[in-house]
Length: 165
Length: 205
Image (cartoon, rainbow over all chains, first blue to last red):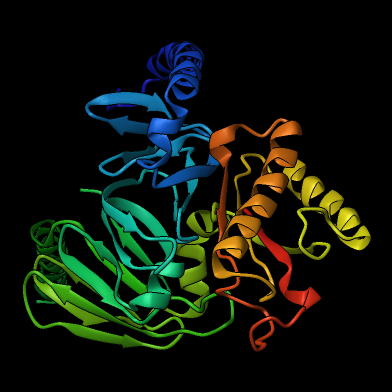
């Protein structure tokens, strides 16, 4: 996998898509069964998904397809051919280029007062962020951490690139 | 003599190359931080606080800095270089939400004739988006009691919510809420009939 042999790549992709199809069904079933209970827990949704995008939740890898709902502590990963766009409950957006990894460390939002907090950890990759209603109430409510720094401010739109090791 | 000088020069080049490679390895992953203009073209200030060294203040569109294990320094990237470095991430940004305002007949949860046509536009926008979700917030004018208007506002929102569900949107993709007479579009004194306040605001995302 690391040395990128073509045969290895193809096997990985095939099994991934089989996994994706199976899990997609399971995810839909679960969503229907507990839609009400989960509605309050969801913090956002994958609105754009190109190439291979993976959602890691509680140690499990799920396909990061368009429409998938996001929770606190979810990890979004993109492969070399992947990119993804996420929208959160307060209209904040976060988008990832290829070979990126972002942890949604904390998300809280009150839709009446616009109060809350959003902390994302950009582990690697190019990521752009646009703050939504959260920043209307508190300009520094949306914060981004990287391996080497922490970012916050009045800027509603900013971007971070963490080059791979 | 000439040969020696040439050899020494080559050696020096080689040494500086190794030094550069060595330093790059020591610094670990390099990071870039950039302020971008927002949807309205405005750009604010961003504070970068590195784990090592002093915090940096980035101000204005495309202001940038570079960071690593050794701290952060102001960067000199041009707008073009920034757009190129973030092209894929920026092209994956979700589309901006679209806002619609629909108006109701007095005291009822029935849309005006014009707003029935507007509802078709809402449905078209919902169908156009790959993974739509809608936020529906109902409002009233100030005729009647606060409590009655809270109920009427929610009824208006729920009425449009069920329209969206009929079109096949899953229940968890449409949130309905009522704000009663608390957030008028046009400020009036109490008990004033104001058609522009009898409305539902919908955000298609």
